[in-house]
Length: 264
Image 1 (spheres, rainbow, N blue to C red):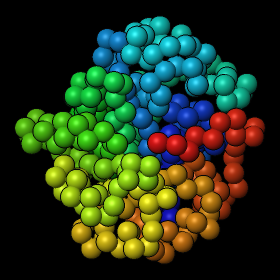
Image 2: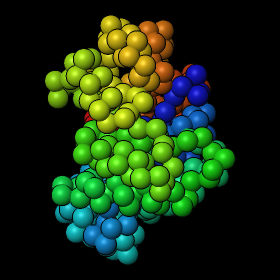
Image 3: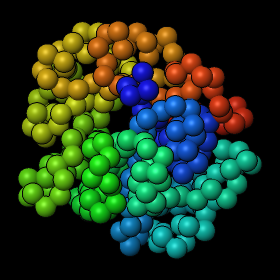
Image 4: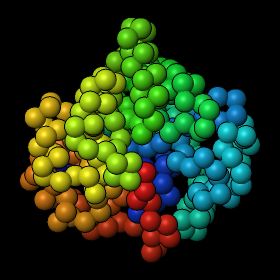
């Protein structure tokens, strides 16, 4: 099970999402993989943050893309979750990859570009990954809801200038995906897998994607019985806020889940 479980934004029910503390919590819970979101600062440095604005997960305000790294590093990215994490910072992608390598965790980088910065985000994130990710570590997985970001990653891979890490198409039920359309788009983008919203992950869809040769991960699943059922139905991996719970190790969380980080 640990190899088939991916901590969502680290261990997002146990520590402030997309922080080094969250990745450390995922490792402590027994997860062997984590997923996290990457976007750019004003000057183009890849950082790990989910939203296009700072308001929800830091003590800052306004658009992420308007802030340079030095100013971003002054923000508190932990107190919103719990006073225990006061002073936690927004990490750069480089800091995150270095930390994961030390922790022995695999990484799923979700390209989450701010509006108008799709190609730039893909290029900058992959360039940092090429420099920082150890060759001996498991291959990175590159995923995105943004079809243009995946197309840019595919173009970069085709140039032969960077490691051609496997790519996965992220799919939200709200976007009206069918199994046939997922297969068509994934193949067109050279993706090896599809990361499905739990609402899309019927046994029939999982089997159809398997028959098409696509790997299947399901997000965001926080109930252990549901995770076990999905594994039985053929899911290759489960993405969860609660790796400790799904691994039946108890839930090492702080407080009462001030924000339920289960969306896309």
